[in-house]
Image (cartoon, rainbow, N blue to C red):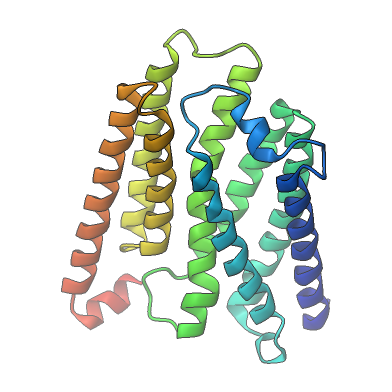
Length: 260
């Protein structure tokens, strides 16, 4: 397949995802906005509605990426060629997930969400986070996918929690707040590992902190256990981010190059 055909497929599949997401958010897709479907299930691992504004930043960044990769000068860019097909499949999976979620087919939505997460991890591993790259690559490739992966990390846990609740496994015998606190703890470990191995990926870290802060806002009055666990998670992520940035900057340039 030619480079031009690949670029066009990336643009088309992304455009479809953008349209379907807009329809789902407004309720035009299934009759009920996505946020209302999410709020209909009173689980404790759900951030405040305002937190979902992050999708504006995600789609702005991905739009910039889609346009950038479509430029004639980028047709043979090896990095863009490596991540093109995982991105195409993530677009298709994202569209399918929205349709399933709108239909409240939560059991089917979970493996699709896991597929999206896996594809984004595949892309992320190709980005060379922490290495010296051009400004265009940093702002138009690394940052958009870091933000996207950060949000999907949290969204995956929320999707699983909501699916368990919707199918009668409301708390797995632990109680809603306890279950949510455990999920926050697991999420914190995963996020901290990504931030540390990414040598202080600011975009990823801040996105997850934004999501966890939304849990604090939404759940503090319902449960101080959940709110407290979320606050602790934010502190841990910030500490790991600060240490990673300090460690990365304290290394000599040659050592940083070898580490990348």
